[in-house]
Amino acid sequence: TQLLEQSPQFLSIQEGENLTVYCNSSSVFSSLQWYRQEPGEGPVLLVTVVTGGEVKKLKRLTFQFGDARKDSSLHITAAQPGDTGLYLCAGLNFGNEKLTFGTGTRLTIIP
Amino acid sequence: NAGVTQTPKFQVLKTGQSMTLQCAQDMNHEYMSWYRQDPGMGLRLIHYSVGAGITDQGEVPNGYNVSRSTTEDFPLRLLSAAPSQTSVYFCASGGSSGYQPQHFGDGTRLSIL
Image (tube, rainbow over all chains, first blue to last red; front, side):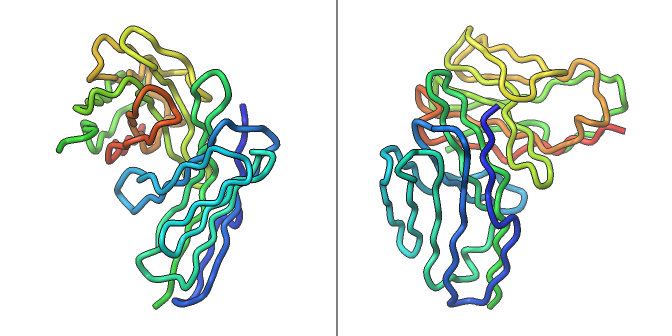
């Protein structure tokens, strides 16, 4: 089983602050996805990164795939209350189409 | 658009009972999967399917069966419910592989007494 550890597990910050969430593994993934989940709902895809070193931006969110394709980070600039939610990374294993999810980071933005 | 529909939304079972969680998608996706979500553990893959007639095990398959007779449906069967199976179950579908964006249902909250 390929494990994806996310840190921190919980994060509570004031509106307007910046933050970074990390997703780490000892295994190499062919691609990596980030999802956000609201209470009572299923996760919703934010982004997919495929190439080592790739950086993608989604408004105030910046996603980076590590050069070795073992880790990823999500940076949020000037956090807003609407960013509150559970953030999950998910890595696609080579060869068997299994999508492995990370342990999750629960983010709370305080107005 | 219906997307991925899971039924029921809530269920309470007694230990030893069996039941089937239903999952249907109307997007003609080949790839479907079942996950369970427990506090502090993210989503763990139970079973997945890359097309009708093809299924494979995920990380935590014990105690669960699946079948994929049509592209649209991917039911999850609990053979003999145990308290350790108390969880929130999510079904997802997407494209032709796990690389494609996965569309999730709203989950089934299952309690085993």
